[in-house]
Length: 410
Image (cartoon, rainbow, N blue to C red; front, side):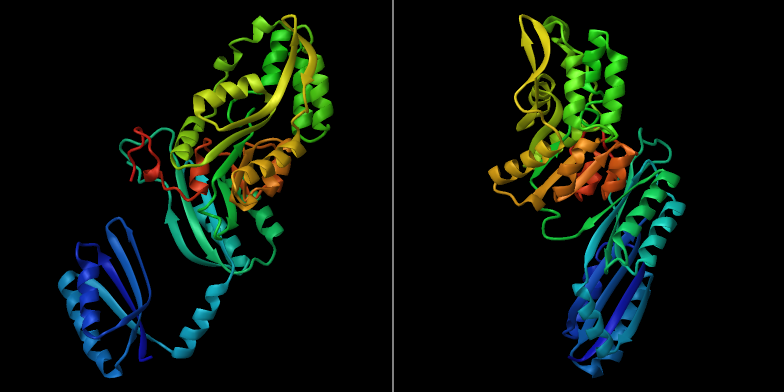
């Protein structure tokens, strides 16, 4: 090892910059120990940590870099790094790493200040910040706007529950979603995504819609809300609600699935994930007649939901087979992972209600979408300020990589 130096280059970005700088370094047989580059509004910041094998070459190399930088209109700074400091820095690279995702309709300095303060208070270091959403025109802004950045941080948080709690308060106060998860080998190797259906893939609770048809809407809605808040056991609440549907005509529910509005971003997220080779499943406490319709229209691979018992053209007030509740969803997630030869860490679960918590808690990436408070408080990853396609940001997919003809940002 010769001399270790940190080279920092800033200024207006231009073609050939890296080639011209590295050509100079190559003349002195310099080795690259670390390198990083960022460009913001055509302004570049390039950093290189290098090892100069021959100490006598340092002054000559420095002069050449300064001269080249002057010709290109760049600021060049070269700082020596002590060998012991370098070794200490190398040892820190084994620290825990996490990805913190901030999403909203806009990202403000107040939000960044609040999030970065929590990061600092928990002794974490911000290694990089990446913009995941596209660049926006101020003259012709897209509707609705989307903004997302990701922090790559290293270190061990003082208290994950405290960090999570503070992020929840910031989300509520400043109108953003903040998610954080470990940056490990599974992060970009997840291949199975399971979705709840009612109030997740569709903007409705199907049993409430059936209840309206049966003339018992208010009664069923009260039970539904109580169940989603976790106040009543799901199976018991489900039996009570289905019993109120007794006598509903089969002909009255035919075609209902086609009238239920999809959640914003549902079509885009499923189409994108299918195109990337993901397996998709619906695990729902709702009904199979809607799940099967979504399977056909959105391209799901699996559907598990409840089947209404219908005899002589009327709903009997019972269901056929085992009720799909929260524990059943978790069991089905494990079974699907095993069937697809995947680790549970390679799975993603998305839902909004208390009966989704079991699968959200065991999945490699659990996401609370437009969730009830009890679910938001227990999930590390939330989406509330944008559509279901916000999930793509959590997976590390940049907006420019999303195949949608209406998206023009870069």
